[in-house]
Image (cartoon, rainbow, N blue to C red; front, side, top):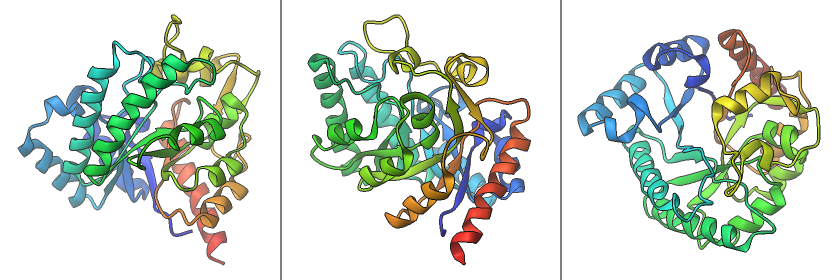
Length: 294
């Protein structure tokens, strides 16, 4: 495999610049960074600060594989909330380009199969963002998991271009919908621009709305709650790589078969030793790179 290995720097649970230095020490090629609040909120970074941060990362010998622009809540399901989220998403795309990456990953909310009004609201928001990203030579990449791959593909096929693309996360599929990541890669091959490397397994079959939320329900997407669910909840477990139910051998083969050459970015949302788990994950990925090269 020729793919570069990345780390979601926030998964290291260190201050940003400490995390960047640690990622380099661990042997990562690049990092993904959350960019929705705090010091990485686009509103808090001037042009000069963006240039300085980009130089800092480049001087470390790292790239940014993507920014994470996940604004939580119900994604783009709400007619009331969507306009503000669309505008902030555009600003995160602008920030990504300033920092040297053309990919922003996100959750857009569950694509419904039985609610035409919510579907149309999401479609309208994603069409606007797709056009903006496309004109900017960027991608706004939807993370897999809240719905099956075939439902997501059908939704993306309604948009006029591929400015809205896919950030493929195999563990989300295994843990929540029970979908097959290998078949998902094949279905979504024309849209995949970034991937997460994560593992886990499902404990109970569950309506994804109870995990990711849905407009009109009290439940909404909060990363802190998802992490708790993955660690100790009754529905699924996030595990170190190789200890869950993601078939990585065939998953990586599928990525090779579709010609995917982008990042394999490690995400670790739970566990008491994130640095140790991520070091093992980098070694896990490297093992498959060596095997694929033979």
